[in-house]
Image 1: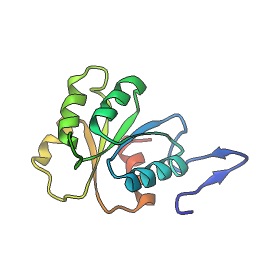
Image 2: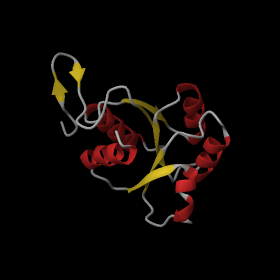
Image 3: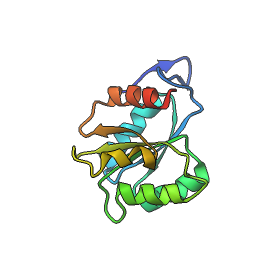
Image 4: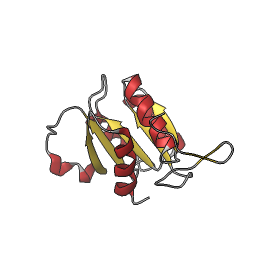
Length: 141
């Protein structure tokens, strides 16, 4: 499999991180959500939570307190920017760093992204193995 790195019995070890990191993956496209989650788990060794919408992700961010969020920009009902505004308005979720996944190479006002807690922007399509390394580097994990 593309995203496999096994060690020992039933122990998955990430090449880039510590197993204690928890990442919330937010994407309305099931295939992308599954690929990102599988690679973050298998290569990064991180615990992965998933959400199919911005509203579901806001609830999970508040209750689960992930170490980072990987966020699709283009989603129905609540896009990534509306999600970021609500995430930052809650003191409990305000400090969570965000990695944007976008199919659109144009982002309105890219200078605003760091102020919204965006530490990295990754364009779709992406290479799953490279994705893990990029996130680990951006988070200094």
